[in-house]
Image (cartoon, rainbow, N blue to C red; front, side, top):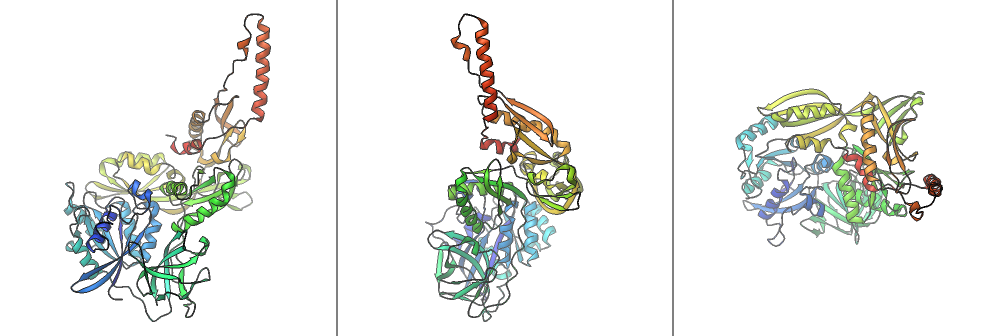
Length: 595
């Protein structure tokens, strides 16, 4: 056991985690020349196309130092704030972390928040200065930033480059010297923490775990403590580039188990595996429950596919434990699910994955956050969907969630960033200069304001330099109203949104204009209205398609033409009463891209 090292790689987006992981794998000869490719551990097409890591990936390497062989278990983690749950789970399975900082960009918001996650779990931090080969690298300045942040010695920071392979040997040496070996009792009853799982259509569900105490053998009868289900370990082993079967996985190792589990609901990330013959009574303290930040409805385009969508969502939840969902129904869209995501990018990725991996075409409603409404009777109602909001006459007040946002940016962008936050009803709490040209701004902003396009706008106005991280700070009273969209006088519940009264007129007008462009013209006129309660605040009309019924009346008396036009008018009126308006999927998404 003293020759095992478990470590993960943490950093901000685009600081070179996956590239560095590739170099480590090549250097330790875990992969052959033939298998190597860029972003080797990112095995989803989506990850390659976007150049981001979405899932954490575990892999085992063997390395010989001074004649002694060491087993290194590496977990490569995502950098985006929306996937921080993946990072927290990887950290729970490790004893050390490589903190990678881009030598040309310095420390950014996500670097700091991932670092705090690692420090909470008492991990040994090894600072690495990556991308030293870039012409824009500022090694001395960035070293000062790292020393300020974690208080290490200057010589402990390892200069490296994922592209050229500089410093890889020094990193491996540091992992073996500085990262503590896993602590655990090989003689104790088995306790293994599940940190991930995948679905395989031939072999059922494969769970990945870290053995904390005891050992797990092939053919053992095992029990999952939380779900209290028992299984036979058909195959156990470690994770090399592919799965590598073994007869026994010992304390401190990271491995997988295949036991023919068919039901996605039976495996929970954070659960503990123990042995039936010699059970451990207490579960390992897993991870904190995930807190979804953005809620949206996901509905199948074809209502008959509801059950298939449910299956797909369960399989997706295995692979991405941070998604939370419950069934709901909508008058406009039929049956579907109310889903909680960690952010907008997470929502987009889930929608993409449903389409690619499960061939499910889905409609996503306008994302929102959850509010708390207090009725005049003193009842508290949690509002996840705008249609749950009680009638204004029965409502005392509404509270909305606020977040504390930390934004780190270059000094030249402070003005635009501040005006963006104030426009989003933000209150500035603090402004401090980290270095001569790097500023940290702390704001308190209503969460509903940052759900739509805040992150994209922030990146645009700061030329990609501002980095953003946030956490919830509780609920506050707010003057919120429900803005309803009516088509031909009928509510479309999927387009309703909760919005601050001050912004509602402007928002209602813009939404109506946008829908007028997107809704196809019919044989009758369609009225698009935005209303608050019974008060209509904006209206647009989609003009009817005219059919020239008087074409056959040439010459003769005008009254014949008039008679025909009157007849047509009555027909249009009747048509409008029975006609229903099809809303294209683009209209639901248009609300997000109003500007």
